[in-house]
Image (cartoon, rainbow, N blue to C red; front, side):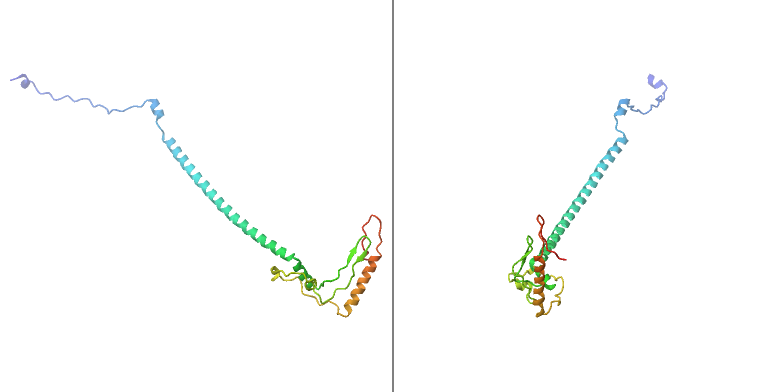
Length: 198
């Protein structure tokens, strides 16, 4: 037999237990590794930028809507101002003034007389106005104003006009008294003459 057969069998010797291998990083490698705090700060910054951009776009769109609303309000106010200006111009028209004067009892005089302040003389032939002639009918040249069709006059026509027989005598006496008062106006050099009323 061989030597192998005669040799006693040995059990295999147990090998010592080895610890698992661990890779140890150096200090520069640890410093170069990104940390979780940096990632969190970056994500928060991105969300803050997006939120700020969203808020700015909301504020700008709100401002644009407000500007549009104010422009439409300005256009409406311009239109109403134009309508009011046109109505004021219609009320300032000679036709409206004459109709208001007639409704208050005034009459037109077909022969006007003028007062010259330099010497106090009455120029023209002062004649009392007739109570039957209105301002619009007496002039003959007045053109009606369509814009005044719905406008209410200032006051109703007063019936305080004197009777037709006594009116010319009273008016002629008033004109004569007025022309007599004007004839006695003193004229002083360097001053503008004016009639004495009282």
